[in-house]
Amino acid sequence: MVDPGVSAADLVPRDGDLPGGRWLAIDEGFSGEGGDGPGAMFDCVGPDFPEDAVVESAASPHFVRPPSALVHGVGVRFESITAAVTAERILSGPDFAGCLGRSVAADIEHGATEAELLGVDVDPTPHGHRVRFTGGDSGGVRPVNLDIACVRLDDAVGVLWCGDSPDGFPEEDVAHLVVRIRARRGV
Image 1 (cartoon, rainbow, N blue to C red):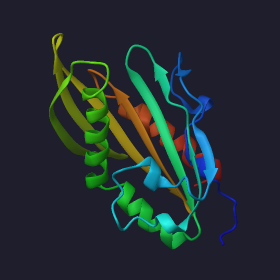
Image 2 (cartoon, helix red, strand yellow):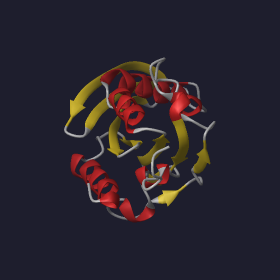
Image 3 (cartoon, rainbow, N blue to C red):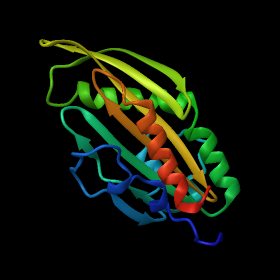
């Protein structure tokens, strides 16, 4: 087993990491060992994800800033750096970003709204991918932007997603969050 110097919780955003002000935590997130691994958290990791090598997982609260900004993150620590590198490759790829975006869009479409999903696009960014999906309801058509970034520190990997509508989450704010998370271990 790897030295537990980096925890899964080190890879998720905290109150002090959030850019600007007026953020609210609308739930408590979670932390766990072993079986609460990313297979239960993500439907999008695929069969090559090293779920059997997960030793710890954590999630931040869903932080919201009215009217429409959201920040959330999930961290996973593995029993080896090799497993973490494999997970990083999967979680930083466009297939994962597109699947996660479609999953979020489907949640919105099947939630308490009358929204209908009209399209999903995935574009690379300096820190990962921006997933844009468009939904329409009786109020009109609205774009939703979800920025997805992946950060690895030693044997732990974190996925961060930042959403906003109708404008995207500012790129400098995504960069700020990534820098704050990397600074926890001097990377």
